[in-house]
Length: 104
Length: 145
Image (cartoon, rainbow over all chains, first blue to last red; front, side, top):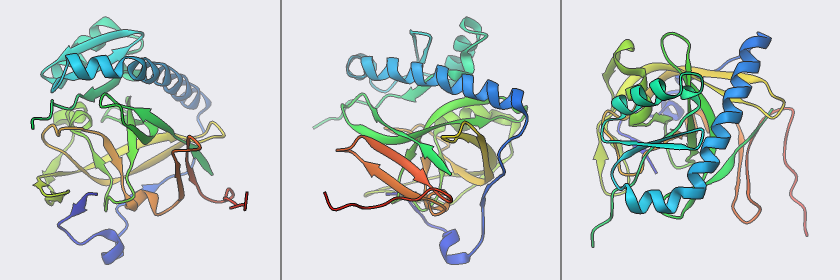
């Protein structure tokens, strides 16, 4: 649950988030579809290694691209490394902050 | 319209319902993120990783504090756009004034809240392994056995 301390759009009737019409440019759509397919593969790689990553990288930022795991403390620096290593596929990376170890 | 999501198994072994999407920066380049479906969230909230990607190119104002279970955290308010791919393969744009996290949180996701989910019938069926957002012309039917 996340509750805003401001009045919510449901209460104010204000529309803050808009849904647009489908993008019609075929090149843009084809590129985005390809990007989402790459992201699905990166996401699946993360899931297959999630337990190990959680054990070994608590509190870190991780990024997965094309079967390669990047780890860092600063997410902006992580993005820069991923972009340099994968100039063609960096923007389909699966990036996540790994939950810190819970203390009793 | 129908958006297919999935159950994402995270590092703590918990599967969470997400829809994959792409967040657009000021230059129109998309970076992919899983968006957590949170019907308990008032608002859509971008993760710290997403806010950091948008960086200094986007104007950010101080947003309201966000209250979770037993704690509250600050937020930033920003104009942002993201795309989701529907089941027909169409790219659907979403945008507006969104909230974001200015600092990393323990288990950070971009969150789809009720400001977006309110437009859809939301199915998060763990036993069936199904995550769907539905709106016209799609709908669901409940069957007895």
